[in-house]
Image 1 (cartoon, rainbow over the protein chains, first blue to last red):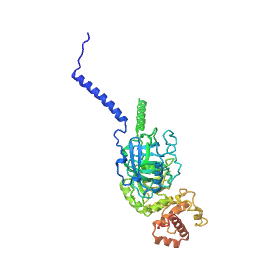
Image 2: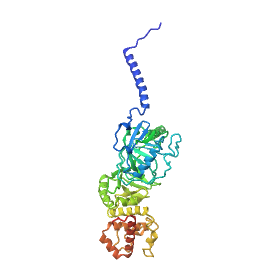
Image 3: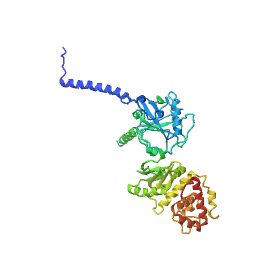
Image 4: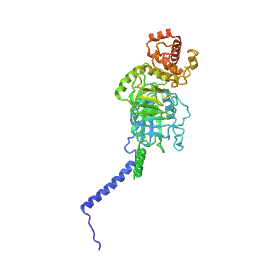
Length: 214
Length: 250
């Protein structure tokens, strides 16, 4: 005859904690997996802007990044940037270069398109509109959230690629053409996929859409 | 046993490399010189000054070496360098492609000590803050001239320059191909400001330029009156600099 053994109080407590631990572990797993869970998504329709015509909305995987463009600072570059935004050229383009807490870069229209990503050439692609001159003479404070046009080693090679800085970069003044600044949604950019050992991202995140508010 | 420990150390080292994250350094990304920190970047003519926080090596063969300095030496020399480089306007510096000044000490190329290394491509001038105090201020301008010359090679014609000298005179094959490297100004100039002027055309031009900038106008006027060759060389340099920036003040 098998004798039924009753759990002691200590065993009950241990059992309870094991169940609790398993529950926490499981729920944490799902929370961590959803990288966008605690990221606030800003709705531009609920915000009053001083210059609504200069507002661009970049939709990233974790929400909206609201950017004010500065045509007074860099007129030709903003004109090019706006043209590409309006034409929808940036939709489905990779954030191909991401450095944790430092910058995100996107806009390679030739080799960074979702579905036809070219890892061998990404970062070197062109828009087909030609390069434009750098506009770096005006004073510009490259604070966290500033948006600039990327270029090759030489000035005057700006095209479609742009970057957004995630920390202050005073040395960028006079080096890179500024086109705007993030007003809301910098935390969305912090969630863009990065790799610890490489600036260039394997299986990167993509721009969902990039539009002008008006 | 020792081998096992070595393997273990090697493994730890590899793991350390693997888990070391990418920390892109803005200064390195801009001018490709490691181990630098910002010294001063808010300047009127927008020159950005960096200093070496530890020694660095450059070049394909890592033959350019410079060491870090202590803060007092940096502070002392910075004021002098700043005063001299402040003579150049933002517009002029932009035209000659100079933007970054790197301060370090015991600068050498392949073991040969040098006052500065100009690099117009990287918009950078490396300066040895421990270079001989006697010539220090003047050589700053000497090195600036090399940036100017490298950026505007088409303007400074070596054959035209050689014609200013005595027909029998020949420059050395390179700036370090001679033992005549003295930087003291000749009492009797005879077409050259210093012994080093006789090394190469570009060094001669740089010596003429640095003296025009460093000496007062009255002294230059005297030299022009006494030395016909130097008078021509000074006029040549002045006219070329004015072609680059008509508003430049000597």
